[in-house]
Length: 420
Ligand code: ASP
Ligand code: MG
Image 1: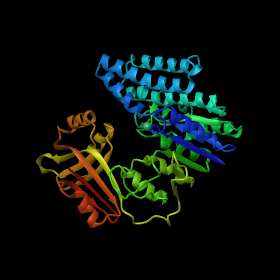
Image 2: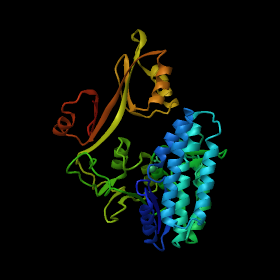
Image 3: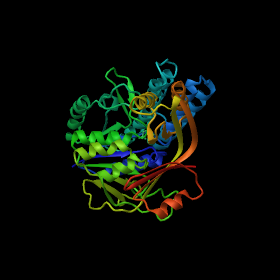
Image 4: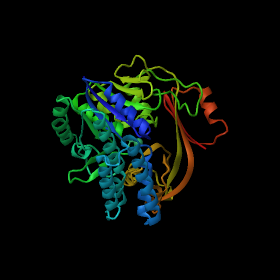
């Protein structure tokens, strides 16, 4: 039996979480196991802030955030290892020193800088988890993801070079697994062919787990979560939510695509291609899970609600009432792609084109500067994108009551509304 486990930052926000990870891993003796970890707690967000201070040349900000990230990791390590002479502290010190040096380097652009800085969250977490596994006599072997996950150089959302990655993952991991070692690696990061660190997009560790599972032909993937499984709506916002016990790959990919945050949209395909069952499982109660597989017989018409806050809407109009058609659209899409803005919803009329996406002010500014020469632009922010799969009139009315609708799109099964 071969399994891939992925543990996210929300589970490993303190020493207790890491103890629990080690406990779970020990519960599967005799299983060939790959463990994929992401950054501890909210470290990735903190590293994004660190980068922001770096780009703004805000020395005080850099120092403050650096110290905060360092403290979090040392506090967790101290509570796990106590003894200040444990080797993990040297390793952490060296890696923080490496980060410090990177903060003094110059980069070609902010995307490259992002990957060199933000990838450190996964380095720190892997050091601590690996040391803790060793401490608990778990036969773990750390394999740096940058040595096995080969990507292009599209920093911040790199694509996998499947040919090379297939080779390196099989060559490196399979012999270790066959020897009975538990392989530990970082999610979210990889390296391009020149050895530069790259990242796969926020929350990308799920994808790392799925792609490794695909290559080593794992029997199962488990994404451990601090929720009971995939729910039909966010329990923090709605009463009477229901857990989906079993859903198909197709249904899961639809939900992930529309923004259900429990699972990264790129995770499903590698699992589906090899027909590997994917469990989204409760960290605290492993008997509670959602099983995603090729079985469609459990898919039902229960409405599923996905809310995405902090949305921006850009309406792009042509000058002189020229049609917005193929050529203009190509230009517009190229500009979005160049600035790495992912479109959540779009709609066009004869002379205008409306696009909804996550509001990230810096990216938006760059986009507007580029498009404003050619087009009339109108912009709204602070919107919410409501998606209901298997909608009904009553639910639509309930969710839009008192709200202004900016865009609306219906298909047979799904309605999307951009509201304020
Ligand atoms: N640590 C990264 C993030 O927070 C990747 C992940 O969690 O999957 O986005
Ligand atoms: Mg994370």
